[in-house]
Length: 383
Image 1 (spheres, rainbow, N blue to C red):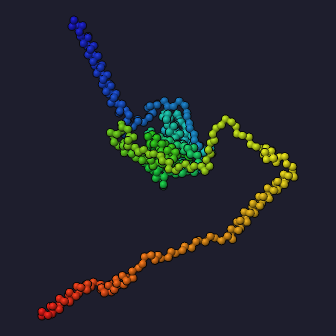
Image 2 (cartoon, rainbow, N blue to C red):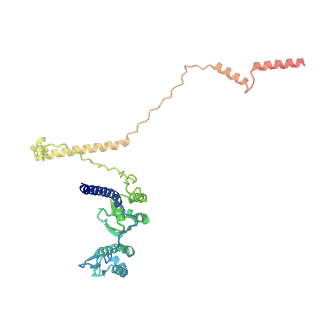
Image 3 (tube, rainbow, N blue to C red):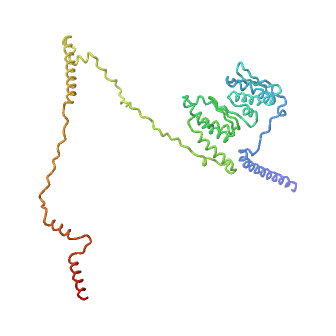
């Protein structure tokens, strides 16, 4: 019996161990999901070496691009440096000044299959007026480029130039701000915008350029980029949504649509066709003129002309006579006579004047003066 119990106990123990392992795996998966979303700081992809591809490439591949005439002198001057940079990656470069083209081809020593793509991007950037010092950075692993075509985004040439200038800003300040925020080199040339830098920066540059050509000012995107840059510094906010922090700009159309002077009002729909207009013969038949003789018609026409002339002369005469018609004078307003109903009491006024003359300004009344005089006399007698 003891022998039978041992294998059962061993099987139960194995099952429990498997369950615990499964639980631990689930926990690890939940923890790793958040970690997998973010790249750890300071991590870099290991460089591609000859050991990764010791046999090299099977076939030769090449790319060629044309360049404008004004770039010929600069390319002729810096071409030895281009060849030196590409030789490190075992890629040949040729400059054809007659055709006006640049060609890059792989060699038997080339081991990196992506080196030819980088070389193609290098000659593209050089053709788009990017200086060699900046264009060489494309050969690095963590640097990419993007050439944005903006020529066909706007119809009118004037508006295109205005919006392209808006992207540059006063004395190139807007472009400089974009370069600092995205860590990219940006070159605006003709109908294209060339950008060179990390992948995350290129994505932002493309968005800003396309929005600018759609009549959205780049300052709005620069503001959001500045806020994002500050939020990225906080490790707690990395896994959270940033929508609550970002500004929301509403588009306001202040100018109202101009209303046309002549408004075409639609007539009510009727299934019946419009009535046929009357011809000249129908009009003559209705008036009875059709049955008149030629001489009578001519006389009628002359009478109508004379009647019109008489009306015109009458009107002209009336206009001339207007100058001789005197203007209407204003009626003279008659002044009303003073009413003698209320009689003035002259004697009462005379008495008032007399009393006023007797009284002096600030003097005592007469009765008080008399009493004062009597009191003074009594005092003198006592003495």
